Image (tube, rainbow, N blue to C red; front, side, top):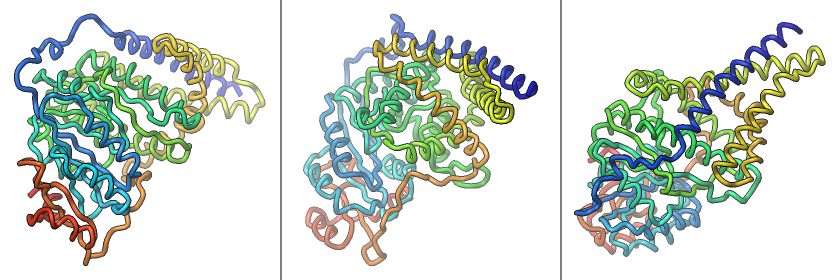
Length: 451
């Protein structure tokens, strides 16, 4: 009994000390300042950089995809904007065909249909290699952008030292369930505490996939490394956003967070999909944390504290929780000290978040503590034990066409010189319909290989 109680008490006390120091520093550095960054001081006059928006899709709901493309088409950006929608071997092409057709006459839009499912990373690369904009904006197909997102991210990217920048994420389906409400608050904290604090030192450790902009010149230097990531000799094709961000930092570029560039994305509304997503993210985080360790000597000491807090903190909390539960089960003794510390830290953190966000709903984020202890910590432990597993987990299998109906890509004759992989067809009927627009065909296999 004494051993279990002592273990739990020591572990939770160390966790409280580390977490208090780490969270206090994080909130302090995350506070907005009146000092503008170098990129904000750059004159906006002259020619604006051209922007290519990449939207990889896989079995996306037509309504969700339509909302995403509509938000991109409605951007108020005054510079040149090209949009590349890459269908990654979806099995619901007939359902999304009307969405594609709605933008077929828009010269800014090009559509690429890949002949088989190759993964989000390769789908992005297929479009990147076929485009030529100064900046590249990656947008998930279930994400809706505010009308000024491209403008605000492009303004931040006017500083040539910045290689990547991300916007603030919210949950578009926040009001659906209790879980989506919690995830929306989780996103707010991740963006406006974690990323905001890291951005103070020009080193956001993960420019999130739903809305992240990259400098093409920097991206091209890293594209081969990005495409051929391996872990323990096996290809690693998830966690693309974190890996690409770490590559940017390793190459000497800054990565930034733009809080007023807001994007709303669909989040899981049930525990099963949410935990599978968290498992995939945990594996990605652990893999790229090893890569990020080499960067720490070159970065501000706060970033070292950030890495320690995010990795050692959960380990101490898990150890304390296991010892406390064992104490309760084996001795029927309630671990009051452990429970009191966890409850106190939860109340303080939620209260600070509610004050900073000016929203009382953040007091309800206390429920996340229970989910973290009883669900997320076991998921992270399992992720650490199965790092070599590269299953996507949340992606549905696409129903691919047979070989006689192999997909091809047709350039959009209205899309201009950048539309090397434009409007596309899937299946014989769809191919015949679109072939009336152009006689130039490029196979999807050619696009995937970057030819």
